[in-house]
Image (cartoon, rainbow, N blue to C red):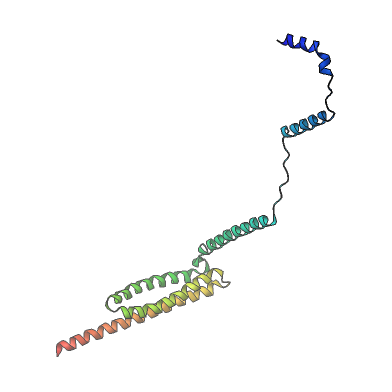
Length: 190
């Protein structure tokens, strides 16, 4: 079959050569080839541009994230910022432990009153809550105070006052119970 085609083209050569292609055909073919080659070559990355709004949003997110991280760091420093009292003054540290345990024991005794006279217990307990709030404030101030020994003395003084108040409260309760017993014994005698 190819032989027949070649023979046909050779016999009719003059008829094929009578038409000339237009001059712009080669230009069109050249352009299409250039475009095809450009598609085949790896494309260069174009420089991306970001809008000002996008950049500001990213910056705001970074600032918020850093703020949250800093807040968490500060919070962890506060919770880990417990001061070693023995390092400040070992004698005061021992006193603080003694008074704290004494106060806890006295509070347990005072809670016994709550069963018999809840109003009296609430009145006594309100005073202790105020003193404990002062103690907690002193304890938080201790970590940042330039004169830690002075703050520690104030803390111990607060504990001493709490102990004295608890002793007085328990004494009042004992006197009240004593007078009740005497009244009951006096009514029995009559």
